[in-house]
Length: 106
Length: 117
Image (cartoon, rainbow over all chains, first blue to last red; front, side, top):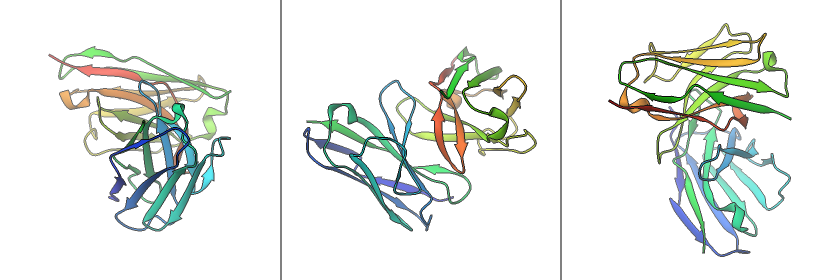
């Protein structure tokens, strides 16, 4: 199966600053990658699909990359952006998630 | 709007059974592939089972194959997960999720399954 590896494990960012999260696939997934945000006690929420297509109206989230290297950027971090971010590939079976990056607000 | 509401979780002893339900509304349920995804306490996300829009095709992650059964009632807009021979490692929050060509665009709030003696 395709292994998804996210980095860093934890990211601490001040409000208004930029946050950059990375996701690496063990083999090419082309652009078949999604990003989710999960707050404590809540379900994950889809942010990005097809690597860079925004599922949310919140324009501060952007995705990029293809093949094996992907990036999620939060351009100006807000307090409600804290939580865990997961990437997920859907190019191959089984669908696999990264282990998550925890974003903390400084 | 799209809603998915899980129920049926609880505390159960190892070896016992449990049936989870996911009631959906706000979209044409019978047109969508559906998933169960679980999250062990403090851990990441793991897909458990998938069922095609018509219920005729289903797949399971290796660790639940032969113990869990996913099925659906399109007339009542409900997804199910029958879980047998539950083990300690099945303890998790179980989410139902709508498939959108491979990614999950809508999730329920989850139902907690705790396997404990």
